[in-house]
Length: 453
Ligand code: SAH
Ligand code: SF4
Ligand code: F3S
Image 1 (tube, helix red, strand yellow):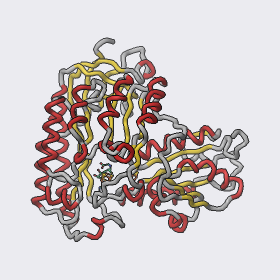
Image 2 (cartoon, rainbow, N blue to C red):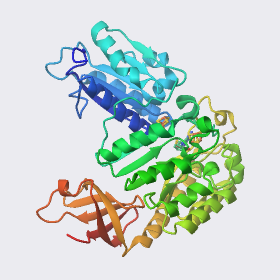
Image 3 (cartoon, rainbow, N blue to C red):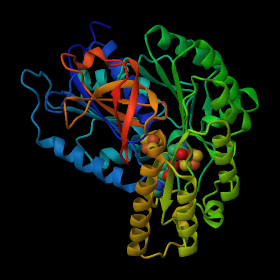
Image 4 (cartoon, rainbow, N blue to C red):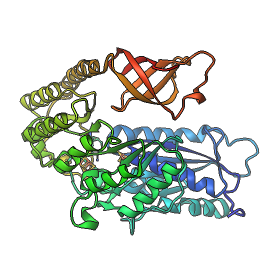
């Protein structure tokens, strides 16, 4: 591949959306690097710009169009032999809009989809040598795309996809239309990649899927997520996390894994979306408020210190004040360490897009604001549990605001700040797990001192 026309071309990848997209971007960087192209950290330095896009809410769509349009005014880096900067759009908007994107944004050279990111290097080569525009989007994945090289963002942490796609069709959600039906990867394949990551020094593996709890149903006939967790835990990696969990499929075996497998971290993202049974039904979530609360009780029973996080949608079509109050009281009752709150965004092509939606925007906004206040209050209260505890922290970086502060994450996935010891640098700590005595708690982080300096 050394004769490739991609050799020595500079590229920059801009990523929106979820961890799945971020991981796809790591694969793009890995692939283009293996074709001898060179990653750069700004658009200005890049001859090729790749956008990995998200369309889960309208805001992300709008932002993409603006950013792509503004590229026209940025000159190519000096010394480039290209006539113009190459712009490629992949990810979920590429998958959804296909040819239409090149109509709306005529200076886009390549549109590719979520199922064929492996085709990007060859598409880029064609554009470099032949010019023109290319649209290459498949309707589904023929198999699980596993053999693409990956360049990890961090040496010590890795995302490991175990399934792609989603079969749940929550009525508000575009994801099943742009990521296709759920396809699991074989256990052997996952274990081989996990072992490779561990051999490479990875300390934290995050298993990824739109709904990890139904992992294996398509290839083994029943969910095999608990079995998978056990097998990965047996490999001996320090930290295992996973996302995302659909409450309807979180079974007792997986709940028990939080107690029996010490390397499964005590943190769980369990999207609830709404606390109202009426709205949950309209959303096609297939669990009730009562069932969700029962899961939370079981989790806290086996792992009392578990940190929970969730996603909530405010202003789903037809949400009445009493429905919102049910959400509010559920958030208060559960006590989350983190809640991602979203205002409902209509997505064309989803069932909710044709539901009657007549709640005034200012009503939705004030519900949203009151929920955000509650979320902050409860997150602070939940963090108080960790005060004066000794926690193992995986160190990652220096604080953006203060370069004398080291930051890392506790087993509960909460950010921890400690002063950087005198005479030491980030590299003395990065990727290491060390104990910290927690001395103070804030809403979104904990402060402490290294136990042994
Ligand atoms: N598979 C994951 C992630 C889905 S997208 C899961 O099921 O949790 C992440 C979050 O975006 C969802 O949990 C939901 O809260 C939010 N979301 C999805 N579609 C939305 C929409 N149309 N409007 C507002 N928020 C939405
Ligand atoms: Fe979307 Fe629901 Fe699937 Fe999550 S489980 S990706 S919210 S359809
Ligand atoms: Fe967005 Fe696609 Fe993920 S729509 S949330 S990037 S699956």
